[in-house]
Length: 294
Image (cartoon, rainbow, N blue to C red; front, side, top):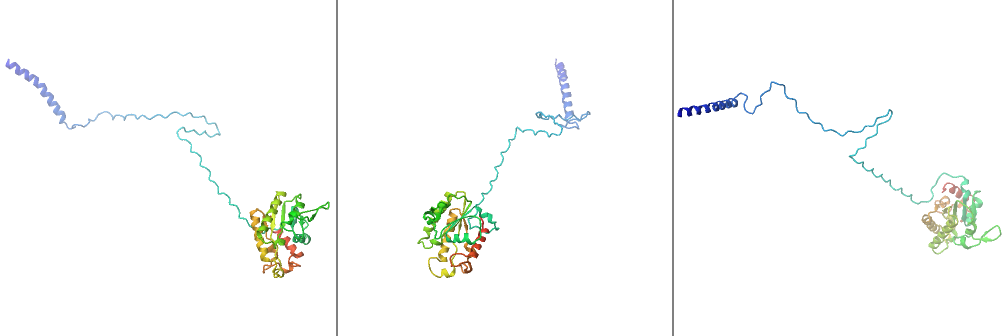
């Protein structure tokens, strides 16, 4: 029994030993553990990379001579248009007396009304200008043009200057007033009353351009008399008129500079009495208006 058991044990052990030997042979082979065995067949192809499919677009057929319509993107939104740059506001030109310009023809004065005192009367008589209309009176002031009946109408009645010219059509009104007011106590009184004249002219002639003329100077002989009719007083009144012109948006024509000499007085060859202009003086006055049109 013992001999059979021993044989049986060896019979079981031999296959186990053979299996062990085979395993060791694999482990200690030249290929080494962990290395792949080269295959006699060609290398396997790399796995196929799946390309993500893009959604199909519907393409319109292009007609000859026409550009293809641009596809509308449903992803990005259009950016809002940038706000247009604002242009800087134009600055208003500073007010100034009427500057010198190219001389105009006398037809320029066809729609002009000249309003004034005895100096305007002399201008109508001696300047040679045949155009325009004149309303004047000796001794006229910014107050008397409202109240003093000095202008004779066709029916023989007399009315103030402003009433006489109220119904006259015109495009421009040239005013020459102030020399007879030089004796007034306050310059402010003159300026305030002059403002009322402008307001009345605007009321009667809303479409007309109002032109204020500077008061003409007097001669050195007249200035030396030390009366209220002197050039220093005239200069003060002219400053008031110029300020009024700016305030009331009127044109200001400094005609006085055309007849003033280096001494600041009326040039003696342009006057016959030291106050009023002669023919030469009136023509210089007209030439100045021609080259300082509004």
